[in-house]
Structures are given as structure tokens and as C-alpha cells.
Image (cartoon, rainbow, N blue to C red):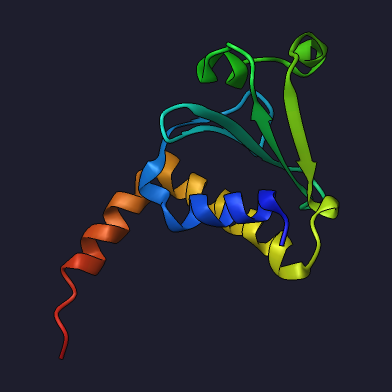
Length: 123
């Protein structure tokens, strides 16, 4: 398993360390912080292919989320991982799971679902 897949799985399993989730200018793109310092985005294209990006520059997440398609060439220091770069089908499914988790966080569903789960009384 590659380091990027391990990192994606760590983000999923430690979802409480994900913050500042914002919808990007491009449709189906989420920008977020991990551990309050690592800037990421994940995008799902029209063919349901995922791309995850890591940003090493000094730009703020809100700025990155508002960059228009034609302005991306001005942004430097991006490490891009495309779904096809990952090994197994399970590795690729991790991207889908992270995308869903970010969508839930953006909409506040993670808090609602956690509340419902914590109130679950065993029979």
C-alpha cells in the first residue's frame, strides 16, 4: 500500500482531525484542512474519477477553493494523485469514502449522525 493511500485511510479513520471543509469553485471539489495545517482538495469528475491534491504553498484554503479553472496554472507547489495512480480497487474506494465523508462534514451530517449513533440504546 502506498503512502498516499495510508494517508487517505488515516484521514478517514481520524475524521475529527478534518476541518474547514469548503466547496470549491469547480463542481464536485472539496477543500479541507487536516490537522489544522495540511491543505488538501479532492475532486470527482463527470466520469466519477477522483483526484486528490496536496498544497504546499502559502495560499489559504478559502483562496484555493475560489480559484477558477483558468487560474490554476498560477498555483504552484501542488502534489496531485489521480485515482488511476493508486493500486487496488480498495485503494480507489478509499478516495470515494473520503469524498463522502467531506460531503457529510460540509453539510453537518457527521455531527447529526454521530448524535444519532451515540443515542442508540441497545435492545
